Image (cartoon, rainbow, N blue to C red; front, side, top):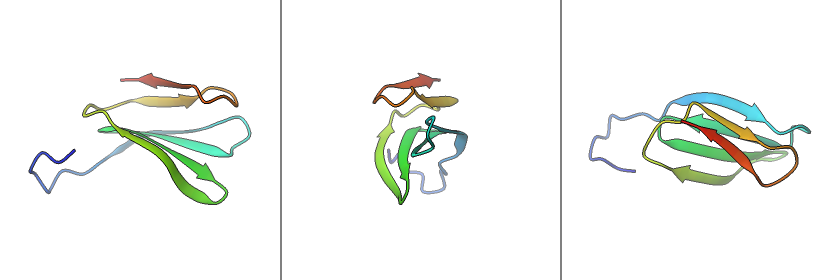
Length: 68
């Protein structure tokens, strides 16, 4: 999300992994990002326009838990 302020930095608030460590989730100051770990590739990101404190990958499913 571009609010016209080029000095705004995205901050990582938390990092979590799924049970077998094949995916990593980042909660950021504007949303969340999901990466595969082998190789490290961004798989999904969502700009919610609001900070998240935690993102949790639920077991080996495609469900995630978000805490703002």
